Length: 131
Image (cartoon, rainbow, N blue to C red; front, side, top):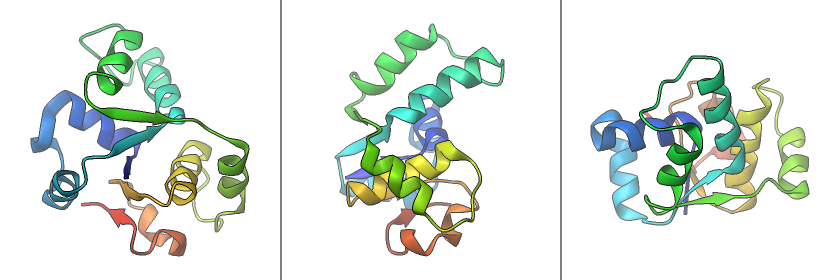
């Protein structure tokens, strides 16, 4: 399984493969089990509410399209994931990003992200697909 970070998920749904790096596109073509953390739904809604993301559909409909109609599974945020997020190396201060990283670790999944800080996590060694 490959967990998509929020930006990868949004770019892929809106613009398709052309919005992603060749590395991420290749990984997604090899493994067809894709997921996002439920925190990504929170992030998308927050970005729309703050005017930082414009969607062609109402946000609830977009999230539905971005999940059910795209074959991407939403993974719940569990107590185990929250614990793992707190226990990660103190590199990144964004709690949503830490939850996304912890989700990939708990599910023993790969992670697709364009975040420039993610490669600094030793916990993600061998799991991260990026730029």
